[in-house]
Amino acid sequence: DGVLVDSETIVLKAFSKYMQECRIKTNEKELANLVGKPTIIVIDILSEKYFPENKKEFSDDIMNIASNIYKKELKKIVGVEEFLKKSKHNLYIGSNSFKDRILDGLKRVGLEKYFNSNQIYSLDLVDNPKPHPDIYLKAVNDNDLIIDETIIIEDSVVGVNAGKNAKIKVIGLTAGGHWHTDRDKKELINAGAIATANNYNKIEEIIESF
Image 1 (tube, rainbow, N blue to C red):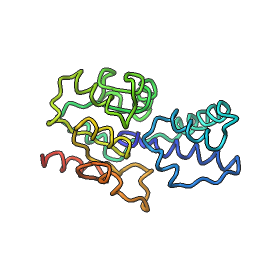
Image 2: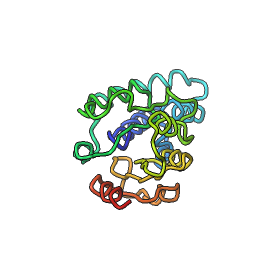
Image 3: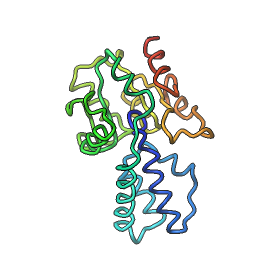
Image 4: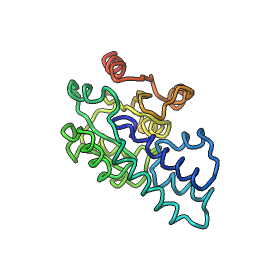
């Protein structure tokens, strides 16, 4: 989400559409601050605030809207496939999404050939989601990775915090649609990223510099 596929804007679009239909004004910054959290937690936060008496209805409606948009509009992050093709590194996914959704998303955009199922670490495999480090530490431990030789690419403050909590170097990627021109890229640096990049060519340059 936001690193391989440009899906964060899809979820935000679903929330925005629903709120508009309910004639509820939302702050774009409020929604942007929820990027990176598991969708189920975002739904819980917003339903508690705006629809405390109809949480189930809100959750079902949002998931239906998001699913329909997801099927029609999901795209690869620009440059990611070229990066994956050329990479000589061991690659893993660490996500706050469920594994079935990740596998479906990869297939929809043609990236499934770059990741086996056992290279995907998801919300349903650990006790605690990001910003806890569980997902990344499980990937490290399962594959005997050396933390000092491991790099995480993240697009959200929540994800950067997870990497930092795992004591792994994090590069912030701002290529996703949720990183609009008015959004300060320093968010990721302030959260603990060692550098930021707005495209995969720069990501490669940063990795090669270590």
